[in-house]
Amino acid sequence: MLDSAVIEVRAGNGGNGQVAFIREALLPRGGPGGGDGGHGGDVVFIADSSVNTLTKFRWQRHFFAKNGNNGEGHHRSGAKGSSMEVSVPIGTEVWISEDGEDKELIGDLTQHGQRMIVAEGGRGGWGNTHFVTPTHQEPLLAEAGGDGEIRRVRLNLKLLADVGLIGMPNAGKSSILTAISAARPKVANYPFTTLEPVLGVVEFGPQAFVAVDIPGLIEGAHTGIGLGDEFLKHVQRTRVLVHVVDGSEDDVPARIKAINEEITQFDANLAKKPQILAINKLDLDEVAVLIDEIKESLKTVDGLHSETLFVSAATYEGIEELKQAMFNLLRSSYENEPHAEAIAEEEIPIIRPNIRKSSDVVIRDPEGQLRIVHPKAVRLAKGSNLESHEARLQFHRRLEQLKVTKALNSAGLLIGDTVLVGDWEFDWE
Ligand SMILES: Nc1nc2c(ncn2[C@@H]2O[C@H](COP(=O)(O)OP(=O)(O)OP(=O)(O)O)[C@@H](O)[C@H]2O)c(=O)[nH]1
Ligand SMILES: [Mg+2]
Image (tube, rainbow, N blue to C red; front, side, top):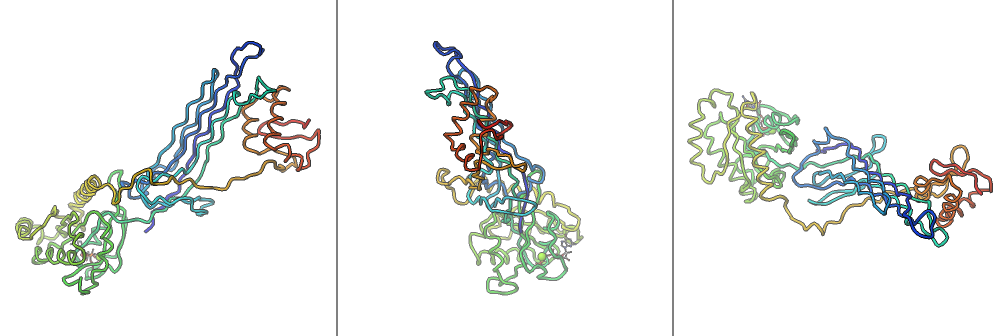
């Protein structure tokens, strides 16, 4: 069963670099003192073993990091924008989503604590301090901050069950899964109705966990009787078991012992998992009148380490309490053992998707005009006031250094042609 969500992530823009001057002898304007803009914050996914489903993304689909602040005079840099950290379950795959389709897998979060930068914040722009050259002691150029990345991504998660429902055929395991989740496994009044495990997401307040309903077990299952015990492997990685018993059957203790014996035969560790005993069909009179008797008889079951609840999957009596008990046991299990294999954080590489970006320097726009798209040149044009002749001279010098001039020439630019860059438009001199 796949859990899935499409969300939008937006990293912060970088702050703008500043053009500013500090009074200095011999320089009429003064020495450059424009501070750099702060970097924009990233949107980061962090794999977290205490998150089990993608349910929360139904209520929140937009995740924005903060912009960096602009630089100021007197060499003051702008503050960095804070990142947006989003916890996701272990096993989450991240896909670029375009037109409702999964385009490209850009990350797979497989370990607790693993981080993935899903949208990178824009770089802070440089202030004019960086643009001093021997010929330009009074730089009029500064960079605008870079844009933060914006992406639409699909998260896909193969659900792993936290809670396993076990018990004899016809006990009401599938009925209980139906009562606690949106899953609709087949329910019928004969043994072995369920032939394959069924997963359901159980919502509990703002939290959610996953329960799995498996085919019924009977005495001798470990020798292959009934459907055998192979489905027990689906509950081996759960943290909590709910042992469902039909309270209307005779000899409840013997039935419980038989199932516990089968799971011990399959895997002794499975038998040690925290268990909740759910005595089902409480709506039937024969069960309701026997509550005390059944409780008393359970004392004869050796090594029973279970909390016992009487429930009815038919009337929902006790179902909320059952959910609560599952949740409590799960929580303490996570507290005692946060994740199966603890891995030192520094060993986990950060996922930085390498999404191809355009490497164009110059393009022809639809009207046939040449437009400079080299990212550094564009940021410089956006961050500077190119109205003054002096600033334009400095800008041209930079274009040569960035090899933009060469690209313009190869694209067939002639003196007097119009060139576009950012919001500026000028005639090539
Ligand atoms: N009266 C009553 N009947 C119930 C209750 N829970 C389940 N049943 C009935 O018991 C029968 C078996 O229920 P299932 O949920 O299919 O049982 P199961 O444990 O999944 O059975 P298998 O899949 O065969 O292992 C069905 O006829 C259900 O309607 C209950 O709380 N009260
Ligand atoms: Mg069933």
